[in-house]
Image (cartoon, rainbow, N blue to C red; front, top):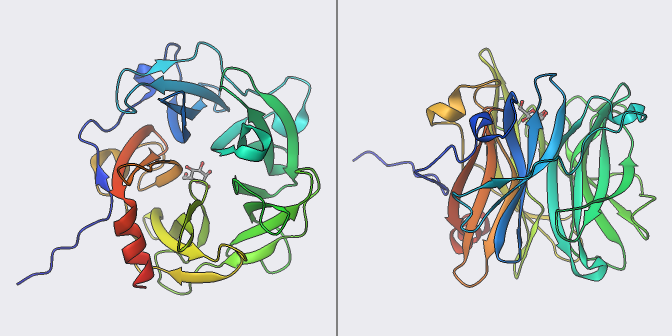
Length: 313
Ligand code: BMA
């Protein structure tokens, strides 16, 4: 009997949920959204690539997180004409509710001539935003803040791509007392070697989820192939008190490009998750991801199954 290889996430039958066609103005693509729940509604903060090639971040809201999306008339975060370090746009937001601050922290990439940098903004409602500016200098991206302090400090996961010997960029974390100045990066998770699915570079997906077993890390891993890069998704579990300690790392990817809308697009074979909503009453996880740098898609899983899988690693 042939073993049936089953992915942990199930694609929503209505995928792709959002494309450029759904936008009120002409745009090239919409992808890689942050995802949170605000007042019972699902709020996505989508990366919108305009017909200039430059991206901004715009909110889409839906009562059920699947359809009936209402797209904001104006971007929430768009490059300011006078600021060099964001002149090529804002990309790939992650958002997390922070009890202590009584607001959501949005981490995204600000892109300018010096390279991509980690940018922080805060909001209470995704209607208006407070710009806090660049918190980690280029080249760095794929950032997510933990929702609470660990050992008295804020923890920011990010992915530096410069520095001596960084050929295969890894996931790092920095610590801060004030969300302004951050400690030098400490290594958390490195790409695996050789032919592994996550051998070229890796980065945090959605903000990490606190569970009784540790911080659940859903990350993207890239493999270089003769056909181009393949972006897939994997799991790791980090120690709650010392998140540089990797308790478990799944060997297999748990979600990879299969559907036509993931295989083909501006950048084919890319699954890039930036938002995950956890329904604590049902245990359901809704993973919102960019498909082929072209559309916004949804896949669901159960937290118990993910934990079971990663704990067995
Ligand atoms: C990464 C980021 C993402 C993008 C992905 C695939 O480096 O720039 O925004 O979705 O590549 O192109």
